[in-house]
Image 1 (cartoon, rainbow, N blue to C red):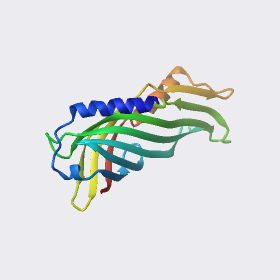
Image 2 (cartoon, rainbow, N blue to C red):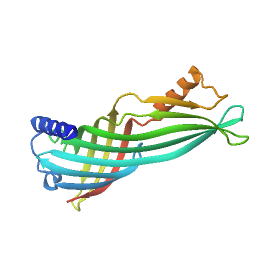
Image 3 (cartoon, rainbow, N blue to C red):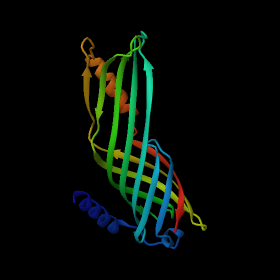
Image 4 (cartoon, one colour):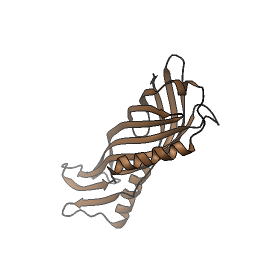
Length: 210
């Protein structure tokens, strides 16, 4: 119910600031489906529906996962960093046709299901020494700006930048007996997580409008 209320407020706000309806192809196509070919948060799918004039409701879903490994300086241990990002957006897109037909700004909510953890293991016997975990918030807001080109055949492409605004993550440290993670160790881990978490993402989309 809270999400529905936020969407209603965003749409109402968009109706008040929207540009005049234009005569471009954006006006004549009411549905859009695009593949997210590239972004810092992985590939996925983008669906859009034109509500009124230059206002579109947009839903994006995408995912990214992987593992990175690095040995310690002394070679005694190895750190395996696992990450999985699943991100869903509900946006209002406002096409600024008075400025340029293909230009839009978007704003809305984001559902975050992100998980990262680092497992420290001995290189001698693969015994686990510690697990460092990141607890991300589950939701936030997103804002973006971009361009969306629609061709006469119905094919379309998009290029845009989105920023996610949410609360800071929390960190937990599970340490086995005999293993220590000092304050500098924790600071280093937390700094790396924040540095490599893609809160700002560039998107390349390709799809079809009908």
